Each structure stands twice: as structure tokens, then as C-alpha cells.
Image (cartoon, rainbow, N blue to C red):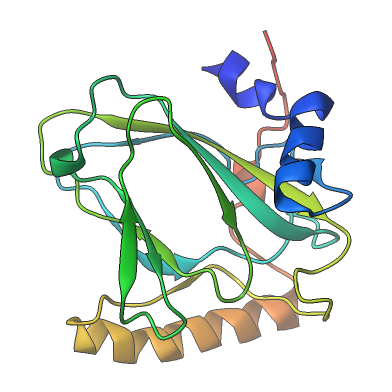
Amino acid sequence: MSYITYAFQDRKVIDIIEKITRIDSLEADSNLYAGGLSIMGKDDFLNPHIDNSHDSKRQKYRRLNLLYYVTPNWKNSNGGNLELWDDKVKNNITIPSFFNRLVVMNTDKRSWHSVSPVCVDNLRCCVSNYYFSNISPDGTNYYHVTSFNGRPNEYLKRFISIFDNLSRNIFSKTTCFSRGKSLMNKNVNKE
């Protein structure tokens, strides 16, 4: 899987993604800060969330997430599918995580997304790579931590998430401390 992961960091691939998305000056993250292989098993899921806004040093804006699904013969009915939500996290579209599918997704302060529960006794595998740039998606200066929300029918989670996200953002901005720095791939072995 490391070959696949680092193939998306090749400058030729980045150039193609820049042409497709019309976003200039993209940079891959060789440290794999929140990137790499993700594996989800039966009953695993992710609630709606927006990814944190920056790289681990808070110098570059997170712009794109490339999701490459690598589980052969995966069916829509298996679950584990990407869900893209509107700004109010009320309505979504589902993108099945079919084998050999590449999804290029914006990562900005409005790109709410989730993963539906895996419904089968099998592993859904995805290779994820983030691309960064010096300029924010909307041209403004902002920072936020990964922020979660409940699904439309999860009223308590939605209410609690307001305070949880606010308190974690304030803490992170005030202390310049954020989770995940210790999880970076510092000794990258590309072979």
C-alpha cells in the first residue's frame, strides 16, 4: 500500500490534479498528517465532520483530500460509503466506495462529509492523501480543528457538537496545541 500512497505524491500526479481542479501550487504531504491507509470493519462509521484546516505546523491550508478505494468487489450495499453534506448537514449525496475509485474532495470550512456504517463482515480500505497550499480555499485567513456534527436525526449529538467544536477550537487557537502531531509519519519509508 505504501507504493499507492506515495504515488499520489508524485509531482506528475499533483500536476494532473491541479489541472482537473484548477487549483494552483498544490503540495503533497510527505508526513501523511492524517493521511495514509484507513481500514473500516463491520459497524465502523464516521459522523459528519470537516477536516482540520491546516498541516501539522499550521503553515499551509488543507485544500484537497484524495480518497482511493482499494477493496475489491465492494458493493454499495456494504456501506462504508462517502457521504457529502450540505452546509447545514441536513442533506447528503452518497458516493459508493467502489474498488479502484478515486474521489478528489475539497477540504474547506464547509466541506462536511461522513462515512456510512460498514454493514458487512469485511474490511473497507481506502488510501487517503491530503494536498496543501499557502492560500486558503476562500482567500481568507482562518483556522479550525476537525469539527464533528450529528446526523440530522441525532439532535443531542448536534447540540453537544456546537460546544465541543467551539471549546476545542478555542483551546487549540489559544495554546497552539493540536492532536495528531505525534501521529505523523516522521520516518517515511517509501519502499
